[in-house]
Image 1 (cartoon, rainbow, N blue to C red):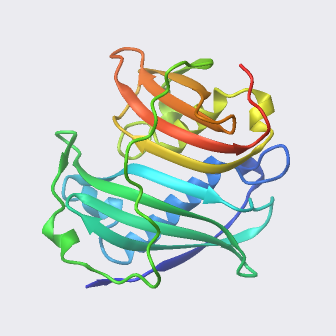
Image 2: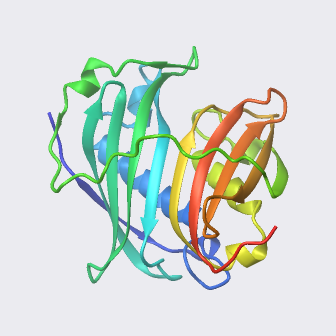
Length: 251
């Protein structure tokens, strides 16, 4: 079987926009994940089909670049395709278009396969690796390398993990982590445009946990570094870097 690109349409709903009427970053990431689900379903390797084998998909990293955010009620097209493989890492790219074919944003992501009972990552099964990757365009640069560590947090919040934070894998859903990353920032930052997001998912968080969200400025005043960690274990759950269109960030 061959892997071909998929195209899915979405409408920016009122529950998915900010005070300016633009779709939020968590909403856009949710659209991209839904488009990926549809594309994998056409190949017989969607999450439901993996769950029947005791396996599941896990998002390990995602790098997003936005040029323009869709407005409330605007219909967008998300194109996605499997863009390559490296050992246990499965790469998938996305491009977001308006109906007029304006490129609104793009993203690249890294996926792994997890055993749902052992909660451990496994080698890519043959029924997935045997699918031939047929991208329709040049892949984006793979999301690789380390992100700079947050050294001196300026902002900190606690987030208890509740029922509606949990997804099909029975751990905190990826988009909830993104919301918690952004919730920690002051209003004067959130009022600016988020241009780039690079997030690494390192460990899962379960129902009943408490997540500590911390953030602080990076090498330049437009870069913010983020860390989510478990209050119970101290384990780092998520590391991220955001790039904003703003003049200055003050603690």
